[in-house]
Length: 78
Image (spheres, rainbow, N blue to C red):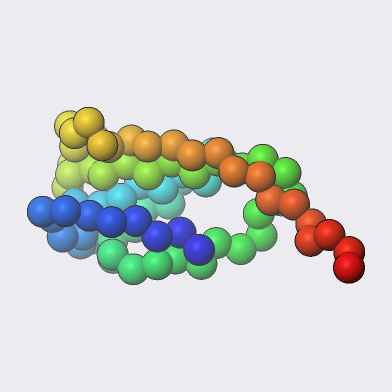
């Protein structure tokens, strides 16, 4: 699940948006809701979230443009 927290702005198709880049593929998010991410490969993946304005320009903030790397592993056998 992909979830994030916004302060002092609302997302919409004609206003602020979140650009989510997952393993190099970009998605535009216009609603502030949790998103289910499916089909990621095992191993390392990256997710980058950027708040952009209605023209697609990055909103200047020290907290904007964060990228995280994580590793998906198979569940160990019991």
